[in-house]
Length: 169
Image (cartoon, rainbow, N blue to C red; front, side):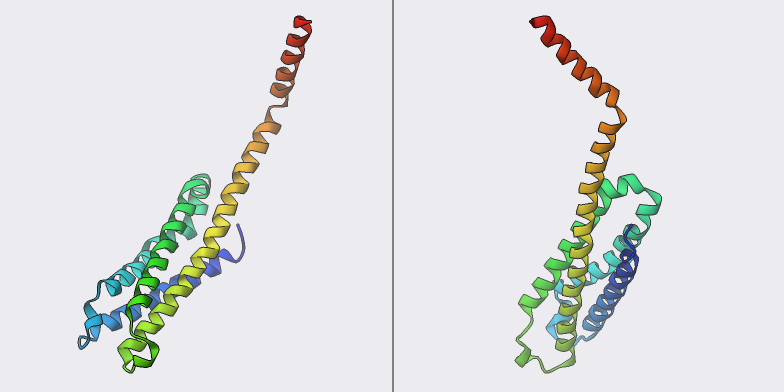
């Protein structure tokens, strides 16, 4: 496993905790319409999902279930979590007012939430790319291992074809 994955998982956990804090602040500021926006609740879900499910599973699954996690689960969880973050920060960025019209702390928290969401998405893009590369390499290695494990089968198949061609002649 790559040595920088675990520190990046810690960064992902910290960013998701920051998302939970920023969304909690936004929900607690009852004086504006953003406090009850579905996008804010969606970003709160993203933070909770990443903190409680995605990062712990992605950190521990390679140790507990190495074969299954590399082939199926890790790329799937990475892809789902990256998609959640992408859709969350884009939806939030499309809805907030322009930076010139943002003069209150709740709006600044929304801007910070967009930045945190975009950085979080970028971290999942990086780890997802390496998860996909790992799947391709493991399948290639498994195929090479199968080919090397049975050279007598390959020789027997080659002998059968030469026998068949000599019988035909």
